[in-house]
Amino acid sequence: RKKKMEKRINRLSGHYILCGGGETGRPLLNELIKNLEIVVLVESDADRIESCLAVYSGLLYIKGDATDDENLVRAGIDRARGIIISLPSDKDNLYVTMTARMMNRNIRIITRMTDPKIEPKLKKAGADSVVSPNFIGAMRMASEMIRPTAVDFLDQMLRSGDGNLRIHEIPIIRESTFLGKTIKNSGLKDGFNLLILGVRDIDGRIIFNPPPDIVLETGMTLIIMGNTA
Image (cartoon, one colour):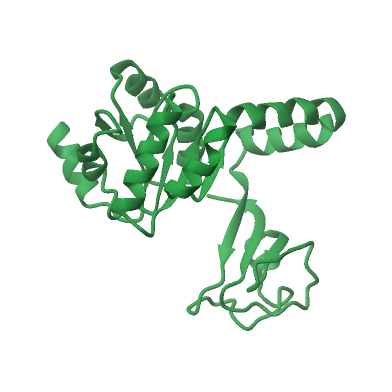
């Protein structure tokens, strides 16, 4: 079984690596799978692996320590699109961040942190984004107090068993069928039932609720809400 799994991992390209299958890793895994992404878990604890398999029985995983460079190689880090580092120790997260950036200069790295003081070090080591569960939890509690209906809407969207409604993004590339069209004429709403919430233009600015006459250019990214299935 282990050899078959490693053969499947060796054939992957453009996948995501998740380091750590604990309390943060399991919900992460669940969300990635719901969005139809291919994930390889790197986890040393057998019980945590079993818990993640309960989330998705077809999970690909490497049983081993993510701070061991060889396990990142086995997970296909040189071919991966992104890596999420969610280990309990900030020190381990920092080490894996630095190692991942050295192994793949183009990979997107999202790292968990507990101590805010370590954020500059994580960014310097190569993290594209650093997330503090404590900070996110505090923002969630404040939102529950002052805007409960909006929070309930987002929860319903994420947890509903009736569909796969998500907020997602569509990059406009050179080969895109939407290139040169206006939002109104792109067919995204009528043909795909997608609601366009915003646009990041070629200068990196975010335009909320963009007007329908915006012409889509290479380098733009659409922020949309729709069904991921």
